[in-house]
Length: 260
Length: 114
Image (cartoon, rainbow over the protein chains, first blue to last red):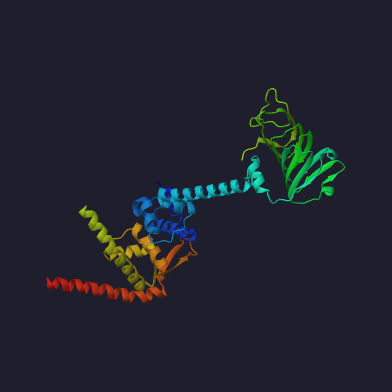
C-alpha cells in the first residue's frame, strides 16, 4: 500500500466524521510527510494500519451515520426490526385499502340487500318509456325483478323521476344507485363508472368506456358476446344452450365476475 | 494473555498521562505542530508514535483543551497545523497536574507502607 492508497483508505474509513474535520486530519498527515522530508516514507510504517488509525480518530467522535449505517451498525437485529415495521405498515395500508374498496354489503345476496335497504326511499317509473340507460361517473348496481316498472334508489346526486328520465333515456350521473329493471331487454351505456350486474334476467347490451363492469352469474349461465377486452380469462365464458345474451362492447375497461 | 492485559492496562494509564504531557509541552513552547511535538516528547523519553499522537491531538482539540490553526509559509515551506493551549486547557492543566502529583504521592506512600 503506497501513501496515496493509504490516505484514500483512511479517507473512506473516516467517512462518518464531519467532512471538515476529516479533511483537516488528512491534510495534517500530508503535512507530516512534508516535515519528514521523505515523501517515500511509508505512512503504514509510521501510523500503523489505516483501520487502526481510523479507530483511534473515531474514538469518542460524534459519528454522523446515515439511517442505513445506523441499522447496519446494530446488525441484523436492527435490519430485521426495520423490515418487520415496514411489513406491518404495508399490511395495514393494504388492509385499509381493501376494507374501504370493499362493497358495503354483498349485493348478490338478496337478504343482505333487503336488510340494508329496509328504510331506503325508492322511486319507480314505467319501463315502457325507457329505451336507454346512461351511467356516467357513477356507481350503479342493477337487479332484475318480475315487475314491469324500473325502480331505483340513489345516494349523492339525487334526482326526481322527471329529471332522471328524459326523452326515453334514464341517466344516472355522479351518484351511487341501486336499480331494479324489469325482465325485459335493456341497453346500458357506461362511461367512467363502476357498474355491477346482478344475475341479469334478460338480454343486456352494454357499451362500456373507461369503466369497471362486474357480473354475478345465474346458474343457467349466459351467452356472452364480448368485444374490446383483451384479457377475458376471468370473465365467465359462454354457457352452451344459455338462453340469455349479454353483449359487451368495451373501450379501456375491465370486466370481472362479481365477488364479494 | 497476560501480555494483552498488561498492554490494555498500560494503554488506559497512558491515555490521560500523554494528554497531560502534551499540555505541559504546549505550556512551555506556547505553540508547536505535530511533528515537532512528537520529537520533543520522544526526546523527553516518552515512547510515542505518530499513530497515537495525531489522533490524540485531534481528540484534545475536540475536547476544547487545544486551539489549532494553519500556518502557510510565504516561502517554499508547506502548511502546518499548529496547536496551543486554549483558555480551557490553561485552566485545566494545573488541576490535572495536581491530580497526577497526588496520585504519585499516594503510590509513594503506599510503597512506604509496604
